[in-house]
Amino acid sequence: MLLNFETDVNISTSEGITPLMLACKENHISVVETLLVSNANVAQCNEDKCSPLEYACTPGNTDIINVLLEHGANINWANKKELPLFILHKNADINSKDLFGGTPLHEACFKGDNEIIKILLKKGAKINITDNSGKSSVAIAKESGFRSIVEFLDNANTV
Image (cartoon, rainbow, N blue to C red; front, side, top):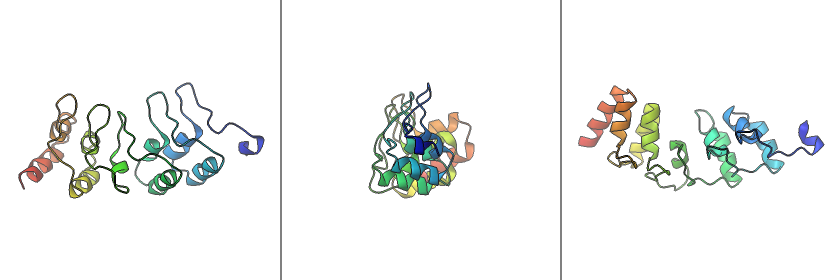
């Protein structure tokens, strides 16, 4: 409805959050598609340097991720919230690092996401890569309180 009145689809809150980011986060694919057709900027980031693609990287948002990628979202763009789902699409580097040296496996271990961890390992993620503060994925899982993930990674590392 607002788009009929030539509203700026890239308008943002004081934190830099755009309508596209919110639609991605809430898994509203029809709204995402409408905004993209109306020239919403897929590369616009909020004050934390998060893009619409990162907002879309939540369980069940695969369709939105694909739509964003089709509209030019950069799969290899990295910041402090590098998300494992980026890496599962196309030919992105499975061990790519964000600005803090974290990999998608680091992020999955921080979040305790067993399913993503298994997928990343199957795709060749390296367990012993350390971030800029010297922490491995195992160390991050341990700090985050995910004992079962620590055990799983320890076992995977010895195979």
